[in-house]
Length: 127
Image (cartoon, rainbow, N blue to C red; front, side):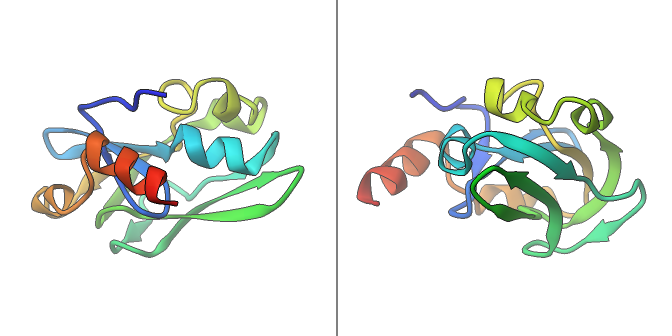
C-alpha cells in the first residue's frame, strides 16, 4: 500500500495532512486494517484544546476499542460528523473521507518531527 506522501505519520498510526495552520487528522490504512470493521467513533467537541500525545478520539471496532492520540498540539475546529452515521467510512477510505478532525495547529513545526511516508512504511516493515 502506498501512503500519501504529503501526509506525516505517527508510530501510533495516525496521519496528519497540514495545510497552513490547519491539520486534518485520521488513522492510517494499517490501523484500520488491524482494527477490523469500525462500528463506532467518538469524536472530540469543537473547541477542545489538545497537546501532542493527548487522547483525541476513540475508534471502536468489532475487535477492539482504540484511542487516537493528537499527533500535534492544537484546537479542534472541525469534526467529521458523517462518521456518526457511517463509521465504516474509516475502513473504506481511511486517508480520505474517513478523516476524524481538523486541528488549528499551535506549532506547525511539530509536524516536521513526524514520520514521512517512506519512514512510516519502513516502520511498518520492521514490525
